[in-house]
Length: 240
Image (cartoon, rainbow, N blue to C red; front, side, top):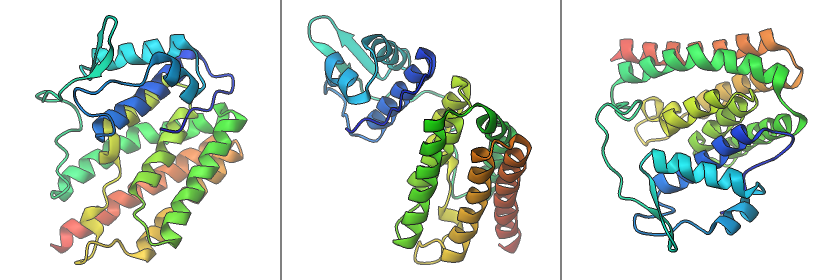
């Protein structure tokens, strides 16, 4: 797994959240399976370019989530997933448009402010990452590839640029549920290019405002983006 951490004067708390989020996604996606060991502490330190302290605290966070179990002298092992009743955002039903609208309303309440904070707090390297991830979404659109993963990565990068780990935790907790696409796809399962182009344009306004350090414009652009998504889903709901 290639390193995804960019350390540019970030505090240990932010780096811990980032490493823990990367490892959590790897576990949840099946890259690391139950019963397998995580790479060694030394290897994780090298892969992510962080200190041993950051890796240890990230693993401690995963342990508190019930995802891993350190075993003395043997390593850190992946645990079988345990269903947790009432775990937030795990029961988002993409077949129910109303469920998607609920999530978008919550995202608007949090991500609008995240965009504003990112505009004034982002480091140069965080700004670069946001721009790169926006270009990655555009590349997916041009190549006719699914955009959800790249879209989520962009919103995650904006949360990281707030330099407030709670925003990162919120986005990580929502996970891929944050980017619902299926309900807006056509009968072949494809999302229209015009829709994706509109989303990309909305992202461009957000990214541009953050890059320009314009907090109010960043908030307004994110608000327009998420409220626009709500309107699209409400229109779909009304047409059924």
